[in-house]
Amino acid sequence: MSILLPLYIYPWAGAWDPLYWVAANNPTLNFSVIVNPCSGPCINSTPESPYLAEMPKLKNYPNIRTLGYVATNYTNKPIDTIIQEIHTYNNWTQILNDSRVAVDGIFFDETPGPYDWRAHDYLTLATKEVKGSAGLGQRIVVHNPGAIPYIPWNYLDLADITVIFEETFANYIDAPKFNALKTLHTDANTTKDAFALMLHTVPNIPDELLDWTVKQMKGMAGWSFLSSVGVPGEYWHSFSSIFTPFITKYAAAKAN
Image (tube, rainbow, N blue to C red):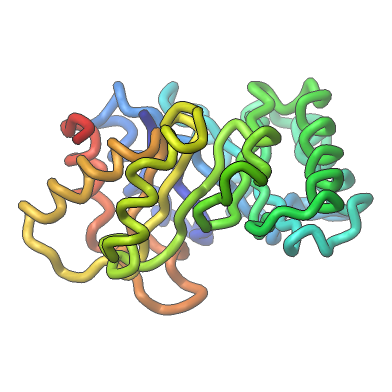
């Protein structure tokens, strides 16, 4: 069980300290942290100096691994550009002359939900590129369609982890969606570790409801994240007020 954390927060001095604190204080909880310095790896340039200063610090915590952000634009971005971005992450240690900036795989954002054989072929090429890249550590492939996959036609065979829900808290507790998420790993004949949940716009809820939510999420997916931010486009660009309580409860909770 782990936290899948989109670290889209600009690394001004001290800005990533909440992550360092929860990682240090929850050493048995694993964090997969998505780094995204240029809406990708900064092709034909290097990340700005605050990133070069902060990204190596993530390696100080044995329970943090990093994933590089790549957006596919629902497979509308040219596959050659996708492969170039993967190559850039693969070569980061040489480009930036620092072994501590190595990532352990790729987080493919904006992957399609509805099945199309052409999209499957496209994503197959992207997966093969990651799996064949020695500089990507564990060579993890994460897809983010942000939606419940259709059974049986989907892209689950191409990813180690698929984000099956990236929506508001209110939509999460909507009965039809909630029930579909609860049975998905059985319906898809796979393990919960293949799935991730990312909830945003979480209101000011009592501790008892947060406890319940964490247990439900653990029962549905091996990877989770929550944010109380409700501004479109800003959900993952700050550590929200619920960040530390969520991490603390997640570390302590058993799946429901």
